Image 1 (tube, rainbow, N blue to C red):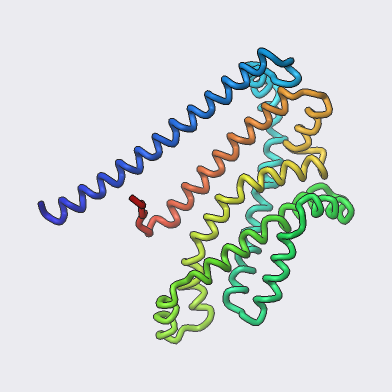
Image 2: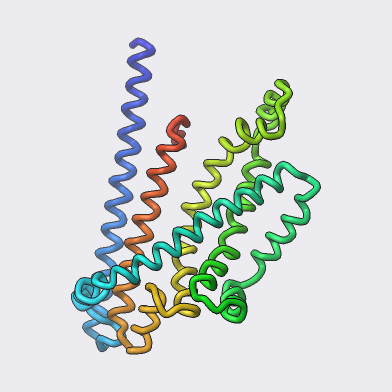
Amino acid sequence: MSSNDTTMTRTTASVFNFSSLIKRDRFAGLIVILLIIAALQVASLFAPDYIAPPPLLIAEKLWTQILPLWDEILVTLIRLLVALVFAMVVGTVLGVVMGMLPGLRPYIRSLVVIDTGIPALSWMLIAVFWFKEPEIRIFFIMSVILIPFYALNVFDGIRALPKEWLEMCESFRPSRWQVLRYLILPHIVAYVFTTTRSVIGYATRMVIFAELIASAVGIGAQMGLAQANFDIAAVFAWTLLLVVLNILSQSLVAVLEKRVLSYRPEVEVR
């Protein structure tokens, strides 16, 4: 067998294994969803609707009451997107500064570590006292919570940069800007994507919590209204919608990551 045939066989096997993995994950996810639906149905047989609503009632709420509130959903998504992009930019800048400027590193790192030690609820209450506008409150809360994730992960990515790469780059006597542009930025892109995929779910929970505390508009505010009306079926319906939105967001980031990092070969541990 020629080397080309061997390479083609390995590539085909790799694609097949990857496709099989995706199918297996989707099948497992479908099984879990069916088990959750079955558990809700069984629970609804022994508990009143205000404790365990049947899945059909939840689906009816989702279709007739939740989905028509597309403007509330859109407000939450815009808040999430703006805060996530801002935190990504600022956190990446802070991480690069910590990695490239040793003199400023201990001060910025201390500030970031202190930020991570402050509970999210404390930031929410502080925002209520400091800011009058709900949009500014939510943006402030999301920013101070998400920025440390990007800053620390980007800094760790720079520290993980192979020493041989840096020495090879320095052999060409580059400027600091050239080191940043040609070595550091391409290296930390993967860390930025990894951080984004990791914090999307957490950021979604935080924006809902922030809307519940500091806003009268958005999914969080609507869930608070459902709670005040003792409408647990609506709470389940909003929760189902958030799960779907989170899965779609994760998939979108994964597609973007695959496109941006298409030059890197995929490695599969056997």
